[in-house]
Length: 565
Ligand code: ADP
Ligand code: MG
Image (cartoon, rainbow, N blue to C red; front, side, top):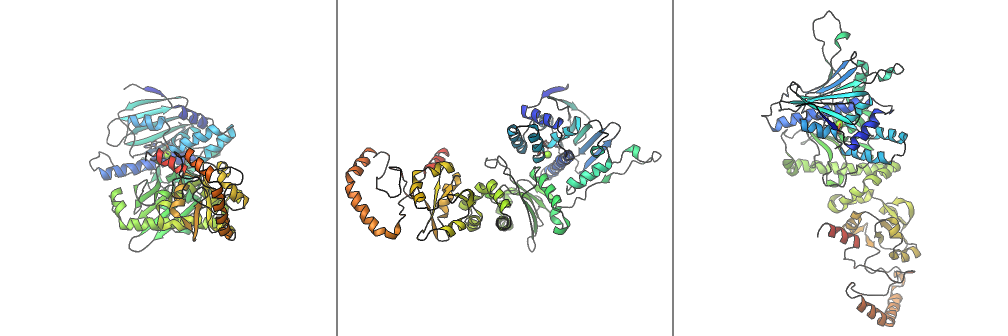
């Protein structure tokens, strides 16, 4: 097949331009990205071979290798992992499929100036393309395990890339960076220096569970010796979750998070758990600092990986945490599972069930700690993940109280600061028995609702709930510490219950007085309403529409209708 030239997707081109012209100071991270991809590729091959023993692939010495050629000014990162087919190279390397990169570009469009764009590089993983920060040409040669023909991909990052087939490619992938000319002013960025490479690997990739080797350059060793230079393994390969807490620095944990979370930013919180006894496991979990943009899409990938005795078994392990904690990233390493364990088996395993319950409680108690010890961090957490966590109020009755304890809501008490239910109850007025809330599209639309008038007049606090899930959980939960949760838009609400009797008498008299009008209104609106009644809940608006306490609210009606029910 002749060499074919293809154009990068528009988004990919945009991203590449940014990489090529980047003045982002921390360029070292390109190596972390290439090593991370190599490690993923080795994991994938080992698993595929485990499932399909007939796969024609060599898994005897899986590793990553780094070669430097200082005369040619090239740096090559090679793995003997799964590799890619011709079609895969075009699809995976020529386009931007990665969700983190997609949200990166979204923010990039919003960034006004170049400085803003530069700042964004540091916050997002741009994966493979980050090589173009240090190279003016990149060549990738790959052969998918089990296939005969290999593929070469070449690009200078400027609009197009070339693809051709190759006959003699080894299994796996090698990425060769043709480094930009050396900058005599800045020796720090000399990526042909073995010391520099060693230092970067130690800093960013030490925990990678596959050996990362470097072969010393021939010219650097004694010319007279005939022996090939011995490769040196650069990483310790120690699983961070298996090492004692005080031996591991926060930075090391953060680098692991970035690798498994495909995120360039530090996590908000690191959670460790060691379980001993009949079913031993270690867990290292992370709460990210930012919600991914696809958190609410159906095929959102969860972030917890399952290992068995240090061996990677699967990504996206849904059996380990409930759906409302799907944003949690991390690793769970269980000692007593079979390497062949399947998703179906995990779903039914009693030990896994116990582990899920324990991990769930641990995550929730960590959030609780954050709330008491570090208000700012808690506020970030709740802003990013509160909406998801509230799903648990409906689906996880066992942990309902723990979730309610860490939940906070916008309230008429304060314009910007959210309130917990505990704080709401402490502020309740004498004689107020219930917790009031109103749901709606936005804070402003709720505050403008006629339902709010009487509450505003009487200075009674109302929680202002704007997420779709709020409708559902408030009904499902029903009460908090013996106080009923009541929508101000539903049913009869008597705000002046201290003189209830006189009020009832008064109302009866008034109702008689207005019987004619009410009857006429009922007749006119019969198609659309159940009843017309006098109300004490309005002070300015002449009338408002109220649902029965057991009726669906308008937003829920819409939601169910959208779901086709
Ligand atoms: P990410 O790793 O976050 O998916 P990258 O830009 O780093 O994003 O890589 C894009 C995709 O290209 C990967 O998901 C993978 O499918 C493929 N890929 C990259 N490097 C390799 C490699 N060394 N071996 C096999 N596939 C690779
Ligand atoms: Mg990657």
